View 1: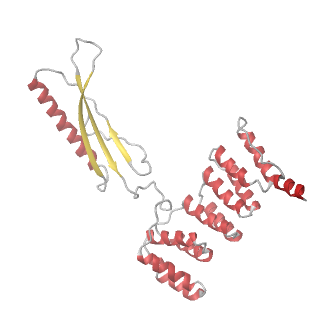
View 2: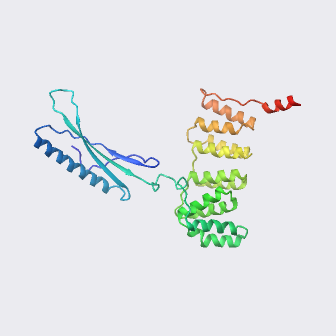
View 3: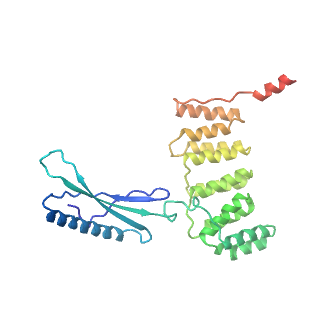
Length: 299
């Protein structure tokens, strides 16, 4: 028999919705109609008591939708009377407030206060004194969602100076937690604008805060530096990638190898590492001097 006081176990939530499914199976003896009706009533009462107990241990902000289904179970023995199985399912819808979803990955919608702050920041960036005063008096008072949205918008516009200002503001907020996606967005914006010194500062900060990138993030950041003509900085990140405790994956290596096509010597180095890690895979090299031969033939 199921203990109503026993806690239901559930795993980690998925990206947009997580479901908690508990299946309870109770065998009922098939007697006459009165006995079956009484047994089914008892099962329903038990199920709803379990539901009340379970909902009391979960967040009040989640909406529950319990369903009870009665289905007969087929018996292998023809003389044995069939039983009934009761399935109890609770599905809980969960929004973006799910704790495992990073705030830097959510959809960033800017409110009116954020729009005003972004516009004023761009207007005052030529006046450092007034800019610092505005950041202390207005920007620091923004809601978390607005501050995140303002930073994302300035990153999209490649406002490096203002992004570095807000980068320091965010890291001083009481709600701030070191996050891989926060540093990834900053590094990719700095790579687009070829800001090496600022990128080194951000990298030192993430190392100090013990932020670990996964293999896909390493590949994306390296590709951003390579596409903007910064191979030495990209290879420094590659060394960090090789020392990462995260197990290597083939796809990030292929992304890096494609970005290293303009740098054949560096590409050979990464290619050797790739074939050592994945000996069963093949790397296709691009045709050499394809356009150079065509130009020489025209001459």
